[in-house]
Length: 243
Image 1: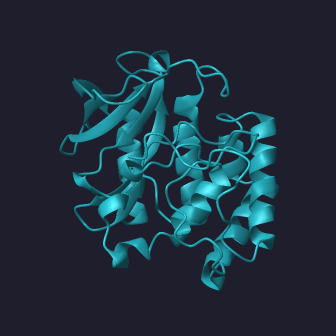
Image 2: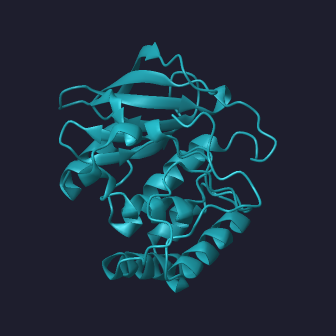
């Protein structure tokens, strides 16, 4: 998906009329399939997660999961890796404010646990991305293959905690050296977070100052790291359920 297409989709997600299509039956939080009706283009599907439908959690601040969905998209774009579908925060949605994300057409039966080896080998950026955002819920079903064979990542409400929370099923590269070509995007992200560009300004509307500081610290630590980490032994390192 080109930058121009991304910008166009983002504009439609922000301004297009939202009409409910249905509710996803799986998941802890209320999640809806909606159709976005732009003024000039064809309508398209999106996923809407209202703040009011978020389950209260003991380890994440209340009513913040939708903001974390949007923050994850911003970090993905700052890295230039295009891992997360276009995502915005809407105040004027059917059940109140929430995140609205482009729905990626895919086969739900194809995900991390039945990827071919060639697809598994493309997931190194995904591992680094989850380390950066401190993803506490990288299930196999949250890694999907679009109709264009592009790998997309979804469901990031449980991210950006200040405490170490990484829980993922993807530990395939533990102990391997981090490729040099993945280090430059990390350096660029650090620069974008530590200087006053739009990325940091936008994140300040979505995350707490402590969470942004923790993101910067994780970025610096990952730049200094030589190898992909092994699963920690002093806490749970895998999500449940795994899919």
